[in-house]
Amino acid sequence: MVPTEPSWLHPEAIKEARAARERYLERSAEVADAFMAELDAAIERIEQGPSRWPPYLGGTRRYLLHRFPFFVVFREAALRIEIVAVAHARRRPGYWLGR
Image 1 (tube, rainbow, N blue to C red):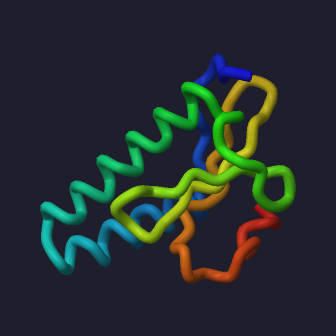
Image 2 (cartoon, rainbow, N blue to C red):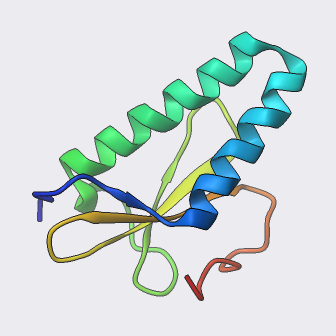
């Protein structure tokens, strides 16, 4: 399925992305910008072919970022992709399952 509507980001996923950006901003604006650019590119790739990424927990799939220790957890809805988490790789798997 290729979505017909823009992706929807869960409010907690937005908070996670912003928190990660803030942590990287403490290091440098360049690193923070690179993180956000990679996250944006990941969402675009997911939208282009969500079934290319392996099934994960609770009916979701995940996309691993290349340069940062984060992954995007998403599920396919009828007309859109739902981003349920922007998770650090060291967080407990499935902490976002109730979303």
